[in-house]
Length: 275
Ligand SMILES: [Zn+2]
Ligand SMILES: [Zn+2]
Ligand SMILES: [Zn+2]
Image 1 (cartoon, protein in one colour):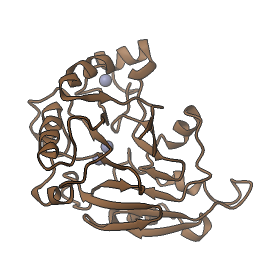
Image 2 (tube, rainbow, N blue to C red; image 1 turned 120 degrees about the vertical axis):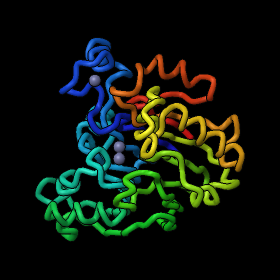
Image 3 (cartoon, rainbow, N blue to C red; image 1 turned 90 degrees about the horizontal axis):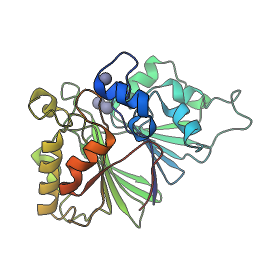
Image 4 (cartoon, rainbow, N blue to C red; image 1 turned 90 degrees about the vertical axis):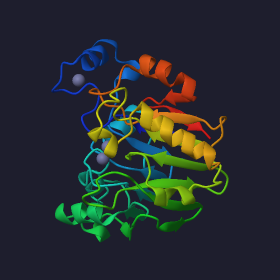
C-alpha cells in the first residue's frame, strides 16, 4: 500500500494568512516541512481520505492526479476535510473525457453539504454510500471500517477509517480525541501495519476543552498505550502524526524531538509511505 500525505495541517493551515504567531512566522521564513496544507491522504492512486479546500493545489504541488480515483472517504463535514466544489470540477466540460464512477462514502452531514452545494451526482459520475459510525464498507479490493470519532459530538456522525487493502492495514485516526469505549473492540488484535494519528492540540496539554475533540501529545500517548494493550499496534508499528495547528504545535523539528520517545514521526506535505 502506498499512502501520500497531500496535507498535514488543521483548518487554518500553517502558516495561517491571518496570523503572525512565532510558528506562522517561522514557517514563512523557513518553508519546507513547516508549511502545511489542510489534510488529505491518497491511498495507492484510487482512494482518497478527505478532500478539503486544498485538494487541487495539493495534487498540483505533489505531482499526483486523480484520474484513477475510485473511492473517496470523507470523515466529517468540517471544511478542512470536505469542500464540495472539488467534486463539481469532475463535470464533463472541465475534462477531456468522462471520469470513472467515484464511490463517495461519507456521513450524512457531509451528504447534506453536497446537496446544499447543488451537486448533481449523475453529472459528475458520483455514487453515494452514506456511512454511520461502525459501518463496514466493501470497496474492492479494500475492506473499510468506519470507527466512531470523538469529534463534532453535537452532530454525532464523524468517523475515522480503518482501511485494509487485503495485504496491509492502516488507521487514519483524525479528527478525534481519545476514542470512546465502544471503539476499542473494533481495534482489538487488528495489528495495524501503519497508524496515522492527529495531534491538533500539540503541546498545549492544559487546553482541556480542546482535548474533548482533538489530541494533544498526551492524548496521542494515551491512544498509543491503549492500542498496544489490545494489540492493535506493537512498539514496532510505524506511527506518523498529522493535522498540526500553528496555535498548539511547535515546528516540525521540535515536534519530532518531543515525539521521539513515543516512536512517533511527524508527517509532512508530500510524504509518501510505502507500507
Ligand atoms: Zn480537521
Ligand atoms: Zn500562527
Ligand atoms: Zn474536524
